[in-house]
Length: 439
Ligand code: UGA
Image (cartoon, rainbow, N blue to C red):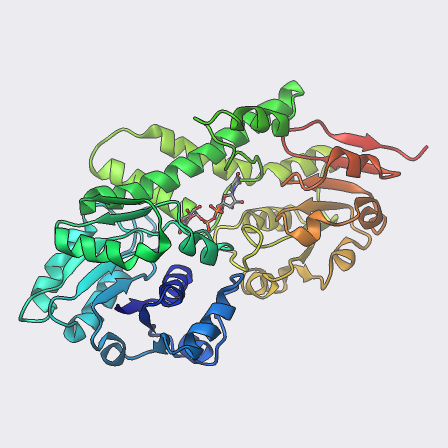
């Protein structure tokens, strides 16, 4: 099948590359010359394990092309996948301006009878609006059909999630178009849900909001565990074996971040308000998450008193491991609070430092290694559970610090690893603190 993908962000690029990998002929279009230049040179503009290898392979095998030109990219395209950003506006609603612009830019070059697939996360009813725009600006002979096909990939495992999805959701009023898109995904051998466009749009928001709520729920249970002296990890394990609950997304931490959960939860709140449907539970999900991001700073203040002039090492900037993305990362809230309290922050992340520099500028110090960040620190915050951080020999790591005080926001270390230290104050999430003094 000849496919054009508009937008080479996480979703667009991963989708385009993986569709080429399963045998389709794909052209990825982006208005950013900088991105397309990198991609034409076989380089991925985003950090995503395994992606660059597949870009080079599929370019070599002539199934994958990149261009900034809509005319070139849309030539003979049977399917046009739109995967541009739908960021959050100040009122919480999704901003559809990039999507509308992408449709308007592409419309003059679409072939008659082609299918436009909306992969971007969009409010319920948007696919119908896109159809209206295409009826007006699309090819005169027959305006393209529109199919909603939300994406469920996770950053950091985008390639795997795209090639082995849990399900594929296809929503359209046009049954023929829906069955062509179903066929496009046949090689993936995944369960397919075919429905109307509005339900497909809702599946995406409902899935992300449910997962975000699961995280806020387990974070609240974690806080309760800390108060009553229980252990959140054992509690999560004990709950997760119940197949109705499931073990995934039951890890207590310092709140969810990223470009999706915060934005999609806000958008769902806005949708519920627009239709006057009470949905306070999802608002609570959001509030719990905002509070959770402050947890490490509160714990540090409880232990150290004023943080003024204290040297705090922050390990991890990215919102989760295996990505350099810092959008809505808990590290941003944490570091800003530390700076407001007058602390001196030394941060380290294996891949997200360049993005951190764009946010914090010269307000913090950027270390080139964990050891450098820990030198003479009064305390350390473990913020992202990178493998490099989880694999540290804790006793050796804390030996570089002025005071071996560890606030672990991701429960990176086992009790055994902590107990092997000669001296440490270890404050995990949802578990009792471990304090070992030098005898
Ligand atoms: C999320 C969804 O998982 C994807 O299915 C969806 O396609 C994507 O949003 C999207 O809408 O595009 P992503 O934002 O890449 O994917 O990251 P996740 O792996 O879901 O993690 C989100 C946040 O939740 C992270 O900050 C992570 O640290 C946190 N989290 C996750 C927890 O705090 N506890 C957990 O148990 C799991």
